[in-house]
Each structure stands twice: as C-alpha cells, then as structure tokens.
Length: 290
Length: 290
Image (cartoon, rainbow over the protein chains, first blue to last red):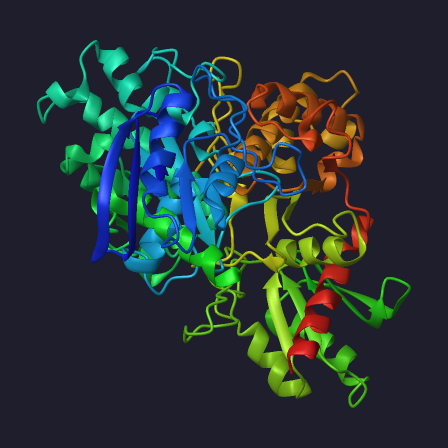
C-alpha cells in the first residue's frame, strides 16, 4: 500500500509483472480512508503473507517508542497520531512493515528499477513537496528518525529571487523554495502552464541541483533517482545535471561523475509505480524476516 | 596511524588504555614522511597483527578501482597518487585498512568514545578545514566515494557577510566560509586571539549550525560528535546548539532533539585521540576479517 497525502494505492501481488487488484482511494479522513483500505485487504484474508506500507510522514519508526508506527507531526487534519502500523497489524493478523513513501520507493527502485545491483543510492521526488529516501549499504536509511531531506537549507540570492519560500516550518528551505507549489506561487502561474523558455525552469534547476549536491557530498550515492511532478517537463533533467556538475566543481572524482551525468541522475525506472512496488518490497522483506 | 595533513601519528597497542610507543612525524614529502612511518612500524615486525590508517584525503576507496588505496586530488604537493595502502601492505606484510581520518575518528568514538552503543552517528571537525565522517547502521559510510561533508552549500546573507570564501573549488561552501583559516581571513585576525564577544563567534556558530542541520536532516544521526580547532573556544558549543535548535524549527521530533541538545551535539570523548584510536579500530576490524 502506498499511503499518499492525496491518494492511497492498494494492490496485491508478488512483483512488477504480478501486481493486480489495484485500487485507488482518495485520502480524506483517517476513518474513511483506512476503512476503505482495510476493506480492500480483507477481501484477501488468508491469502496475504505480509503487508508493506510506504506512507507520507513524518512517521515514528523507532521500535522503542510508545508512538512506534504512527503518523506524527503532519499538518494534515486528523492524521496526527494515527497508529497506521497497529491498525493494519491487528485487523489483518499478518506481518506489516512501515516506512516513508520515499524510503519505500528507493527500496523498490533497488529491487526492480533504476538502482538494481547498487548498495548505496537515493530517491528524490520534487512535486507537491520534496522528499528523499536512501538505501545505504543495502539497507533503508533510518537513524534517530527517517531522513527529512526536503528541509535542507540551500544558498539563494535574494536579489535574484526575493520569494520568501512556502515551508510553514522553515520558509526558504529546499522544499519551501523549489516544490511545485513554491514554483507556482513565485510566478503566479503553475509550472504545468510554463513555456519551455520560462525563466522559472532555470531557477528550479539551480535549486534542485543545490539540494542534490548536498545529498551527494553527504551520502555519496552510487546513483541518484530523481522524479516527481516537476519532471513532467523532461528538459529539466539535463538542466539539473549540468548545474550539479558545475556546483560539484570537479571536486569529487569518480567515473560515474564524469561527463553529462546521464547515467548518474536518472528518472525512476518504475515510473509512477516506485512507491507501490517499494511497499511490496517492504512486505517481502518483513515476510522473509518472520 | 593517523595520517594528517600536518603530522602523522603512529602508535602500537590494543585500546585506549594500551596505546604506546607513540611517535609524531611532521608531514613533509611522501618519501620522507612515509619512510619514517614505515621505519617506526618495522621495529615491531612479527608482533603486529594489522595496521589501520585514518588519512587526509581525498582517497580512492573503491576496491574495484586501479587507484584503490591512493590519495587522489589533494592540492598537497607530491601527495596526489601516493599508494598509501599498498606501500604499507607490501612493506609490512600484514592486513592494512584505510579510510578517511574523519571516518576513522567516527569509528573510534563509536568503539570507545561518545558514540558507544549507537549505530548511526557522525563525527564533524571544524579546524584547518571542515570534515565529516559517519557510521550508518554500524558501518563506516562509504558509497560511490567517502563523504565530503566539508563542501556542503549553505545559505548566507551577503549583506551581513560579504566574505567570498576560501575554498579553491567552491569559494563559499561550508569549509570555504567556516574553517579556521576562513574565520581568520574574514576578520584579519586568527580566532585564537578573539575576545569572547567578538562578532565572529556568532557568525561561526550560525554557519556551523547550518551545515549540521543539513547533515542531521539527511543522515538523521543518533548523535553528533563535534570537534576541531575552533572549539578551543568552548562557549561555541552552546551557541551552535542553540542555532541548530532554531534552524530545525521544531520540525523533527525525537526525545534526543528536545531541549538544549547538550546530549546530542557533544565533543569527542577521546579528545585529540579520536583519529588515532579510530585507526586502531580500523586495524582491529581488518584483523577480525582476516
């Protein structure tokens, strides 16, 4: 199950070529949304081995915490404190694995997509918000908490871009400056309607690149999987790659970082299904463990 | 062995309470410096089980690379291309482990210092340069390369601070703005001579905090071990902690991040010996593996 802020996707299966019975549920109240999701999975009672959930966050993923498995400080009305993990564990009586949507998507891309055979890579999505997941040495990154890469601080030139940023917590953090809604608000026009020569694309490429450079210097991923709504304008990929290359300034040396970065910063191979297949990979992981 | 840019420290032993025969070698040419280090270790021939080297970098740490174990693009005259790992392996005939000085220091703090019992933490040093090492899920972080956290990009207010930065690659990256030499150059006076109310301390706290916030959001460490020359002014710790707390803006929720962060951002428990003991931990790791 992919538990997104606007929709939940539920499906049953064993892999990318066997993913069926897919349903799409609008995210409304927890009672209504989770009720419908549970009703879907209950149809398969006795035939499900495990459930994986890739969810919007923030989530409490510390097994030692009393709030383990719940949605925490989301501004989404009604969702703060919802014990996502326990609800499904108790109702379905099967092992349930929970992680962020982006950590799940990273896992899915590692198992079946653009990061197959790699041990250390990141998945970054730039759309309604900015989120990042990571697999490090073959395992989903989880430390004190799950990563919150969307809230990185990046440099900006206030003369060139006086827009204050949209993040309710930080104003001009990465997401505050470069999410789809930030782009739309800055130019009073959504990016879907921009012509290819709109000046917003160059600024967006610069901001996306600055965040990626920080992630690359910190996590040194073997590959960066980059997607999300703003990349429905595909030329943005080349623009971002060029800016990343400029900003790294030839400081890091590795064959993967030479040239145009076409093989280093790549779209998700699973397309729109990274999250859902990532949730399936979570389920398969917890099934193996139990 | 701690292979630093200004000095090499060599020692023999089995732990913090058994570390002896320590020598200090000034870092000059590779031939002279490595010759003296080798001569030291050869005195113990037949009695050494393994050698660990925590070195200045950048290093090629990819076992599949033809340049594995060498110093790569350092501006240090004569050191680029030096095959550090092979020289010691061949001369001593024992297992040798190599990593960055900061990854080694992180490992040392994990084994005997401020990060005992933790699985995911970082070690950051702010002095002549800025460097960061990380242990993630119990292993030293190594992806495509080792991390280069010192070169993160952070926001800055050019009106408040017009200093262009000192990094030869990036100008105003984290290290370019906040290393000890950058502080000295900006104010035409080294920080060792500053009074406690010098305005440079507040700016330094702000910059150190901005880099740490990015590392915290990305790696979500259970603890941050922070040291280096600029912390010879101990009040800087409290200033950095307050700025980190402000900049996180109550977005991340975890007990460790509540309050004044005194238990979260801490000095190295091993003091000046983090690097050398980290190298010993590297040696013990490679000895166990072979």
